[in-house]
Image (tube, rainbow, N blue to C red):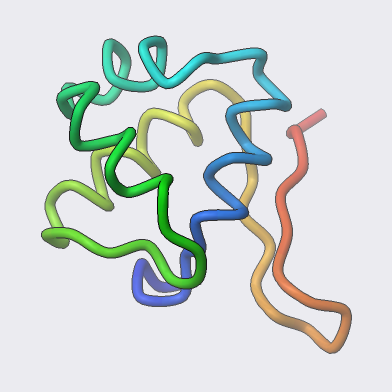
Length: 81
């Protein structure tokens, strides 16, 4: 899955799976809390700079999240076994 296809809903669901607040995601990703809060106010594809998206995705994947691409059932997230 490319970063262009990552959605705000996936980020929020991923945070819920690992029980992270926006502050936790900021700490683990190195992205400021205000930036994460601003991004999560929207819906749809995640906006912002590509480096920001990569940092958020990398932090969540390091915590055990797998991002699932659109495959006929819609995009999603799950925890690795």
